[in-house]
Image (cartoon, rainbow over all chains, first blue to last red; front, side):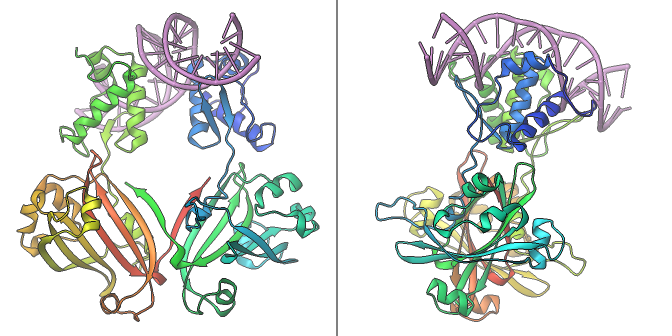
Length: 243
Length: 243
DNA sequence: GAGTGGTCTAGACCACAAA
DNA sequence: TTGTGGTCTAGACCACTCC
């Protein structure tokens, strides 16, 4: 039987939640893994079942865990790469949504611009990996992306042959560089297409374009990647509920 | 001591949550009211405190109630009229957000168009109240709105003198017609400004415009109002978190 | 001090999944 | 059959608000 770490003024269920969250951050528990059962945890830490349950409730609420009756509690697999594209409606002939193909146009190492350094919480002028990428749907370009990564933790990614990089980057970040994306913050604005963007997206210069800035973060809430995506506004729809 | 209504195969805490939610729907409990205390409910229905607590958890999660330690559990006051304007950034000279003034340009009774009938879940051709409204910030028009209400429940609103209608409509719907807005669903798209909209917003025809369609709903989830708002896209920013 | 919600205990029994 | 999470009981004590 172990004691729980942390400030004793913090509620027990919070400290247990912190402990479990920490093992997701360190990678001791990976997405898809089953967390220790409620019985195990209440024995291990000498807690009442209800207290353990409340700790798991906290993590389920944060989207870190998900529960399945009869099976167990599992680390949730964050699968939001489709989520940006939920903003755009790219459907195949069958009406189902498609993940667009992608083409990396450019990948270089250079100092990161100021606004990216701020977003990634590194000091000004830190070397970064800069990428341009074009996402295609049925041969038509639909989204143009600029992507920035801090160079040091992603040196291995910088040296990878382009052919080994598929349509989804986050699994590569995890596999090759041990950086797991758990969440992202996005900001959306509208602008008129520059000549460069108009050429890439094959639209008229000045036509309205949706701009989505994304900062991808890990379970530890530290920024991993900065990304700016532009798509034609006439392909765009977004729904939400407010109260 | 009372028995809980509802199908006995449904968990007790769900049936209690349903009962309490129902008293918000009927208006027995109004926003700002204090709900019965946990002790009262566990006595009243002969339930364990933990079961009552879980029922309240459900309603807090739905945004119907909010809890304050030492004070009680209260019906949450839905205050999202500011929420559309979180999309637009209208700040005063002090940097604080402002609720724009508003001017009703038109208010008429006519049959509702098909798409509005669908949204409000009434049969085709039902008489409605149609309004055009312009929202201003420091003398500049910022948002143009079309609003539709079903006439029958809002007859009293249709006859109100324009001077009695302030900048916020939902409190008027509640006070004059007993229709309480609890939530809303919004869909956002981008279009080029028509000549009419360009004139109202004082922008160039063809300039990008954000369109937000909103269906406002009651606690019973029934639609109350349909609204389409248009604002200049260069005033627009929207943030979200995804996982 | 009385009343409220917040935390925690120590179980019981049920529903569901997998072997 | 075993192990998992889901529901429910019946309390205790604490923290906070208000009178």
